[in-house]
Length: 194
Image 1 (cartoon, rainbow, N blue to C red):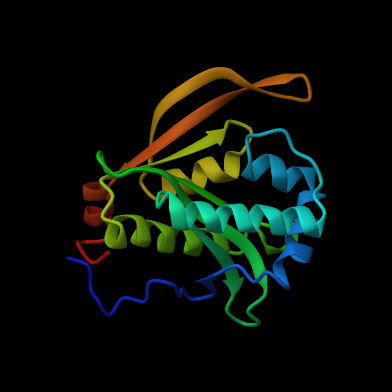
Image 2: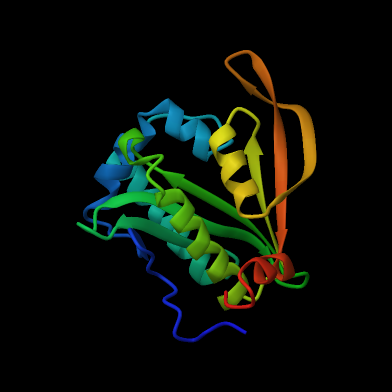
């Protein structure tokens, strides 16, 4: 049973929030100029985006959240100063079967490896399983993203599918690894607390 006193959108150092259309496009535009971040977060071909292009993406995300009802997008903000440090997404939800996919990214290199991703993933799982009542979640990770693979494994995700040499990056072929976690496994790890 989920404790209704549990804070859904706050952790020790980070919080979830909505998109700020005035401030966030400039910040996220800078992230898109960092090929490392883009290749860790997205499987599509990467390219730098202007703030105006990022704003259009935000508008498309909000429209899909409203109309399709199968996407939940959160900004990840540092609690100390409320600055945007990343994004966390539950997407491609199949409500009939209770399945969803997770994506998570921390934008700036200096904000990585500080525990923000772990705290954001913990909140994202609490939201996916406790609030949305999904049965299972999946995260698809390129094999070169060893940090993400370790993070998902730390949270009890199991490697389920390995698509061999399915991603071409700079002329090198990489495996794509699908990790899965069941609601029951998550609850067991959290002793039913969520």
